[in-house]
Image (cartoon, rainbow, N blue to C red):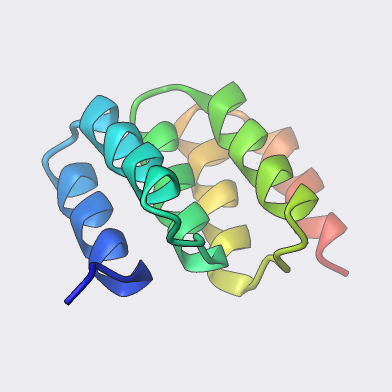
Length: 102
């Protein structure tokens, strides 16, 4: 049995829960190497990791990368990005993300 997107999401989320963004990113890259396509959920978890670690630029880069791959952001993905903005005291950016959802 090969690991799938759901298993990778669980591993990335576990890294986030332990506040190990470097390991979360490493697992994300391993996912790509293994040919497992990430989903909007995967990117939401990664955005959450970056937000927790004061890496808001990387959170936005991941969001744009996701969209460039043709993945459609969902309410959870937007929520993770808004939360990342708030955690980094960027309320104006959070409002901008919110308004871009409409």
